Length: 107
Length: 118
Image (cartoon, rainbow over all chains, first blue to last red; front, side):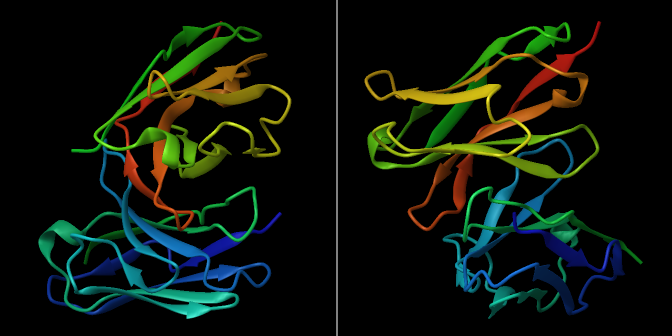
């Protein structure tokens, strides 16, 4: 099975900061990588699919990159509503494992 | 508007069974793969299972294989998860999610809580 490891965890930042969250796969997954945002008590929402494709309706300050084993999610300028937990997930092969999550909180 | 509504969760004793349902609306249900994902309270997400549009192909997480069964009724626009031999560590919120044709979950339900306790 493929293991997904996120860093850092947690991550402290301020409104307006540029932040990058990393996700590493235990083997190559091409670009079969998604990013989700989750707020307390709510279901996850899809931000990025196929490593770099922005989901419809998601603000352009979110971007994804990478291929193979190393991936990033970047928020170019943090808004107050971006403080949440972020998960990566591989869909290269079942079981479709998630990373452990990165909680983004106020510095 | 795409909507997914889970139901069927509750309190069950270890060793018991439950059937979760996910009623879909607002899209052509039979065209999409569907997923179940769970989350232990306060913890991370765990992918559980997926099923293709006509119900002929399934995949499961290793920890649920043989105990959980994913199925669907396209006439009723409903996805199911049959959970047997429940264990305390199956306690979680269970979400269903629609696959966006690129193996990502683009719409999720609100979740249904399963609590396994004696």
